[in-house]
Length: 216
Image (tube, rainbow, N blue to C red; front, side, top):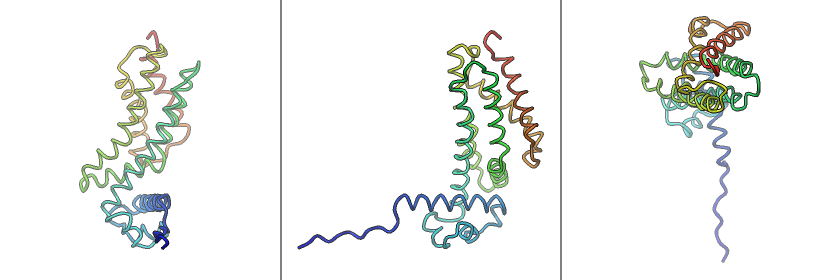
């Protein structure tokens, strides 16, 4: 008597992951365009080109979808930011130039559409979902500061910058970038030119190295 074979699943685990990510990507696009209140699950399904029931098979409801969408967007922003600070792992002979490149890339991520939309959505819904601040910051600024502190600790140990508290140095470096950019962009409502990004990056690095360069 032959063994009864189990039915073969038509949807692979990889396929389910890809479909879920496509839904989250579509949700971010729609939420960013219309806001939380004006977005429906059907809007998201239409953007993702799937049935409304498919969205519900992956995610419970609109609130969970919103939370997971912002968490996924934050992870994406973090990945791009960490790629920028990874330049500091092996800066070579010209530390200033590498710091300026890293600063410029960080500002480009910060001024990018995904980062701006993420901030708008988080701040706009903070009264409804107060825990979102911790969710988004924990996946962006907090982990970025930790990654940057690790790079500064390595630079300090090898004598490229002076002995310091690397966490404090990271906090100050990021503040030198984000504070002027928030003012210039009018809290993300104004586009920033490449020339302005370059100017802020150079100024931030110059101030930072005046304080932290070896021998300072």
